[in-house]
Length: 122
Image (cartoon, rainbow, N blue to C red; front, side, top):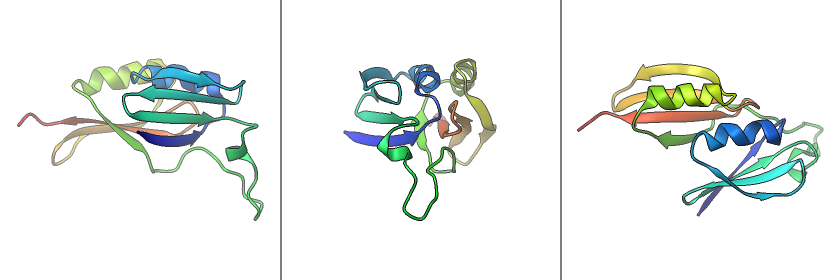
């Protein structure tokens, strides 16, 4: 089992986005925190008011975004990307071809990137 924690601005807005990727809500601890699961991956959605969102000792505040991301392999990249956008995602990197297949990056409603990858047929 792997666990990823994402800082989100709104847990209620994030849940439908991840459900569009096949995640299911497994735990909800009040408005600021939810656990969603797909196979052996849990994602902890930490909203405002959780310990993960408290200011650091140097005064910085944790925030969403960046370029580190989870990668999900799919069979129909165009359909999945369209579904994620419909579920509140924002296209960061459009579908493009790389050496092993196609990929796209879609931000969740809080700006956390998710990479969608479709391998070339071998």
